[in-house]
Each structure stands twice: as structure tokens, then as C-alpha cells.
Amino acid sequence: MEMDDSSSPAADFVDYLGPDTSATVFTMIHHPADLARASAVSRSWRQFVIDNHFTKLQCLRACPEVSTFTAVDVTTSRRTTLQDQDQHSAAQSNTTAENLHRVYSHLAHGLLSPYNPRDCILHCIGASSTDNFPEETVENTLEPVDQLDTSRPSYWSSGGQRDPDAAECLIYRLQADLCLIHEIKVQPFKAFFQHGDPIYSPKSIRVQMGYPRSPLRPEALVSDENEGQLIHDTNYVWTYTSPEFPMLQENVLQSFTLPRPVLCIGGVVKVELLGRVQKQAIDGLYYICISHVQIAGKALSRDLGVVPRGDGLVLNYYLDPRTCGVPRIESSRVDGRSRWQGLASRIWHSGTARGIGGLNQTLLSRLFGGPLRLVVVADESEGEEDEDDLP
Image (cartoon, rainbow, N blue to C red; front, side, top):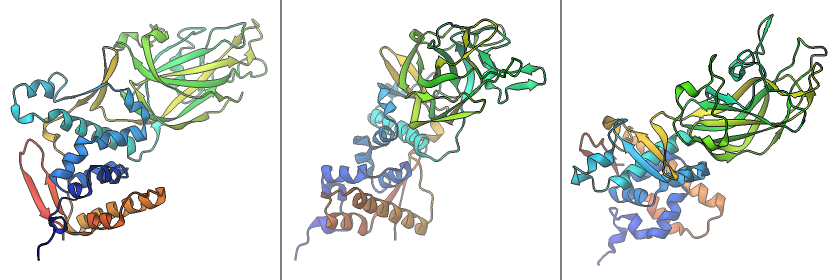
């Protein structure tokens, strides 16, 4: 009696299920490590993941700001691109799709891996105004205390305004071109050297994130000799604007959590200080004074960078040629099987929890129940592949 080839243990289940059902299954894989394991099952599964851009989908799901990128470049150094190398190597005809997969896999890992939030500020770019420079420079907001010693307060002060609705802003450069930000912390300054210890807080704050239209030169940043000139919005493209957060007139570090973690593309954050509540008795003008600012989150790998090009923004991946292969799954046979079973279990539970009704249980049983082959793809520099059978 003849048997259907599709029931064979060696059947390719992506072909058996068809592209639509297979795509539905793969879109339920939310963790980059799980997607890497799935793509290691066979060459056809890996190619299916690459062709359908599932790693980019993971990034978009985590941070919609990823859609800002209009192109991706992979470079083996700061000067030589893989695209340049491709002109001399016909063997890399599939480089574009492979590069996209590699870059977005790296980005997804950075976006979705757990982390402990830390202050991401690296430099001060400038402030919209400063009352007394450099004594009240915006660089003072990087100090975690509002008093350096008994006689030296540490704070930034705006210029005075008669209009209580006049806004100010502070602009910062972060530690990397790509930072995942989820919280802003601001502490208003209490002028303990003035009568009544007034607190010069803004009424509310708002943040914008984006990238400079041209590279920031070190001499343009705030220093003891330079107050900072790159304040105007024409110098930047803002890719995210937060809601307004009301601020208390209290001398404490106040935290403002964003509605969701935001990918700051370009490493520039503008903290807008909206409205004024405190007049200075000596001149009757409204001021805003801030003692400390933190932008809490995670700086992503410096292997990733952004470069404006024309009207768009290019995501650059500076890749070491020795590590340009697909990540390995290094485990024993038992550990490999348990990880695969964990992936299958997460997909089953995800489908049930989401109420997805179009997935045939018999097909999924065959997809995850039969003997599978794990292809471990080595680094391209090694040029070899090893195959192991899962028990």
C-alpha cells in the first residue's frame, strides 16, 4: 500500500501546511531566541523566516518606531560595507535578505531582552535659555545632588519671563544611537538661599526623541566655555512625542513613566518644561530651575547606528566578520529537545490564549509531534554546517 509522502518523518511541514498557515504559526513566536530555534530546524524553515521578515516583525511589535528606518546597511568595518564586497563575490547573491534578517535579529534581541533601567544620558547639548552661564549651566542637571557642598548649589536656571506659560527645554545626547527609554525623572530645584525656600518647578513636562539632521560635533556640546547652540527644532527630526505629565511643586526626583517603552532613534532627547509657577521676589519674573534629570532605559549595542540619508534614515550594523553567522544553539541533545518542546508549548498556549481559530490542531500536532532535524548553521567564515538528529 502506498503512503502519502507528507506523513513521512522527513516531510517539510512548511510546505505541508502552506505559506498562510505557516506564517500564522510563526507570527505567534514572540521571543528572538524562539525564532532562532525555529529557523534552525531546517534550511527551508530558515529561508521561510528570512523571506517573510519575521525578525523585523518582532521589532515592529516591540517598538513601532522601527518603521522609521528606510534602509539597512551592514558593514564589516566603519569604512567597508558588505554591499561593496558583494560586487566582488557572486556567491553572496542572497546578501540583502540575509543582512536584513541578521540586523533585525540583533535589534530584536536588544529590544526584547530583560534589563535593569539605567540613566542613559551621556552629554548635554544645550538649554533654551540659561540665566547665569556657566554657574547655572544645564550640565549641573547631570549631578545627582542639588548641592555640591554647603555653599555651592547645583542646578540649571532658565532666563526670567513675565509670561507664566513660557516654555523651556533641555536637550541631551544619549549613550548610543539606539536607546530603549521607558521613564523620565526630573527634580525641581528648591532655592534654599532665597527667603521662603521657593521651588522653581514647571507646571508639566513632555519629552521628544529623535536624531540630528547632521552629525553632532564635540565642540557643539555644552562645556564650561560653550553654552550650546543646537537648540532649534530645525536641527532635529523628532520621531516620538510623549504625553504631557503634570509636575508637583516639590523638591523630589519625580518619575514619569512612558505609556510604553520607546526606541529613541538617533540618541537625542528633548525635555520640554511647560509653564511656570514661581516668581523670583527680586525682579518679579517667572523662572524654572531644575537640579537633576535622568532618562532611564537601556542603551542598545554600539554595533547598531543610524545615519540620515536623503529624506530617510538608515540603520547601520557594524559587523565583525568573525561573528557574522547565524547564532548557534549550543546544547546537549536533552537540552535541545527540552528547548524545542518549550517553544512548541509557548505556541500552543499563545494560540489558545489569543483565541485563534484558524489553526488545525491535527496539523499542529504533526508539526511539533514528529521527529525533527536540527541544522546548526556555523559562521560564514567557517563555511560548514553540522546536522544532529533530535531524539
